[in-house]
Picture 1 (cartoon, helix red, strand yellow):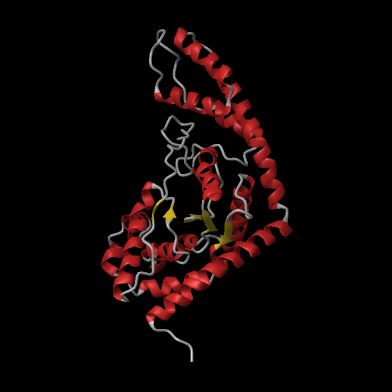
Picture 2 (cartoon, rainbow, N blue to C red):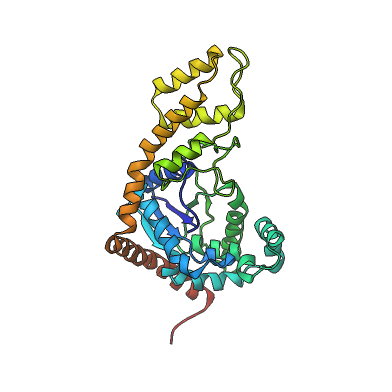
Length: 330
């Protein structure tokens, strides 16, 4: 059985894109591998989050992932700051990370350009902390997005550098996780190609029905088909993509036939149907999220058990790394 690790930043809420995208992978991973899922609260410190909201955000994202199907009986689910071994490995790996390579990191240069008044050391060494997260469990695979590929390659470099420096074959060289299946790409409501928090075009799992209706009603459309059998423009294709995900096949076929026939003045009904079906999908999840947010005893149990299991794995790695590097107890 392979070890898979994935970090979750406690920022914002999960949306339909997460639900039908990454979550599909997570649920499959926890059935087939030894999985570690952690909430990356230390990582969020690079942007100086409001201390009054940090714990609230951790609680929210923990509740949402549990409601979507992450099972603490099948996977290890923990909060990053509950595992201090990660911080020590981060310190040790920093001795093998060089200023020049960190300054060339694409994400660092981009963040420094966007926020020139907050170019902190944590931002610079972000890839090292990410490497510590991965290597503390000696993970085989890490699911990463396009923007994280360079960080994973740097993790491999640090692992290889450590092995070469101390003439050991200790750390694995983790690779990107691939399920072998193409993930569903959920489009945004603004006519763009992807639903995302930064784009502001999301339907969140915690959205109330009225909010969903309002968002779908304002979704970008055009003036209707100019003639029968014309190709759908991107904004209309996006609505049909959402429809295919949440609606019955006969509903999709009905509206597809309207488009093919060149009929007009049916977008209002399409949006009403789409909103209805999205509400049907998200309501049980939203209700489960709200129940979990208010269940302190269960969340405490999940995080304590998760931290215990994570620290058992992390402690073993750190003891062995310290010994390899020459740290010994009297």
